[in-house]
Image 1 (cartoon, rainbow, N blue to C red):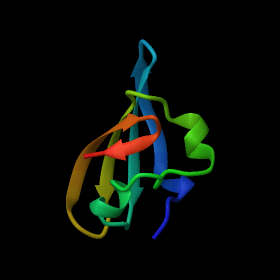
Image 2: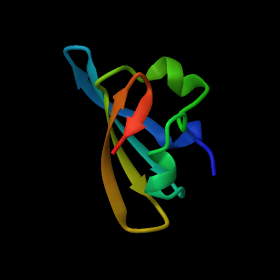
Image 3: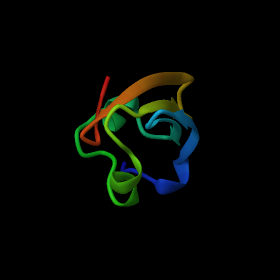
Image 4: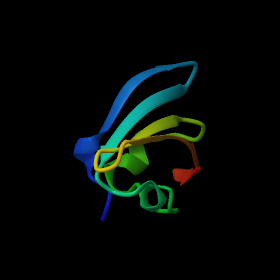
Amino acid sequence: MAYSSSGLHKIGGASGVCLWIYQTTDAIAAVNSAGYFTGEAVNMLNVRDLIIVQDTNTPTTNNEKTNNVKVYY
């Protein structure tokens, strides 16, 4: 599947670093792929932001760190 803006929510931040939660039905491996976050997310996410990814199909939650708006596990 693809990135959906309705699942991305900023939940906090300080000193130029933001904490986000992203809820999706996509598998963690898909979200972890380079280029997954597109569109408006490219302008919202910054290097070193932290994204908590929740797979709503599977009881799985992972932490993702942004680096040039690419997501790595």
